[in-house]
Image (cartoon, rainbow, N blue to C red; front, side, top):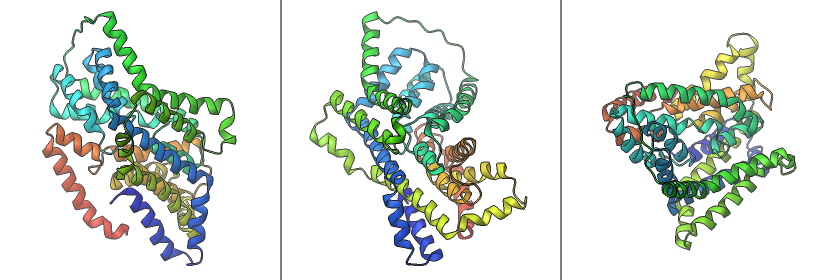
Length: 387
């Protein structure tokens, strides 16, 4: 089931069970008109629209090919290319980088599981510090923490992820010698192609940061990111000049609406659990010393991210639970811990589309299918308890 339907449906079902029926419309209305919720929903929709336009116009192909030609180093391509493609938060997006990863990995004589690992790991290493990720935007506003503070807290995690990925992916590869034989004119063309194709994302990030530095972020009440993304969309339209049919194609994709609904459902679930007082159940356990708080903050999001196969779902449910233990806004280190725990749990989930698609593409069937089978057997017994 789509995550947006799952989160919104769970919130409504919980409201019917736990709230007086007269309060349900009030909670829904307050969530729908809240400026933070509206800004997150609009930002999520705009980010997904920009991602889909990259794909539909073919600009993403220009971007990835120019990077491959500029680097001229298989290891560098394997690390950077999936990360660049990963800037587009589309479901199962690892398949977009898989063909180019395969061609570069062949030069290093990597095994199928090593190719799959490199494609999966380096694609996801960028997200904890990527300001246009719907996940980190939702997590920051759910916890009441500045997006920039979340990103700063996650920088050391990303550095460790990149170092770990390099060691694991390339530990068995032989040292290669690379020759720079490209003409200067060809290099200049590739640089130009890269800068033009990357400009919508780059300008969006620069404007978002600039609005905060000049002090306009607060006055825009959370809509600063929406404004930055709209400008990025305009640049995308200028450089790609899509036909009307190409431009309207993303609006027919359920992915945009599903992820946007998930952003709304995350806030609705938090507000319902707060109104029902369910989250306060855990505060007594922490106060009595029955649960170590830091362990609680690390383990619960990771488990939820693993079980749901979605970091957004893991963060949304975790924040709803922890709001009874910790007052909003959360401390930046707490918000970052919740986010990264849910994210790392999600990366290894067998229901994670990038995981299953990558394993399938590189013919790692036995690993992915046995893991998925074991996961479904666990889920069969645990689901009635969870419900």
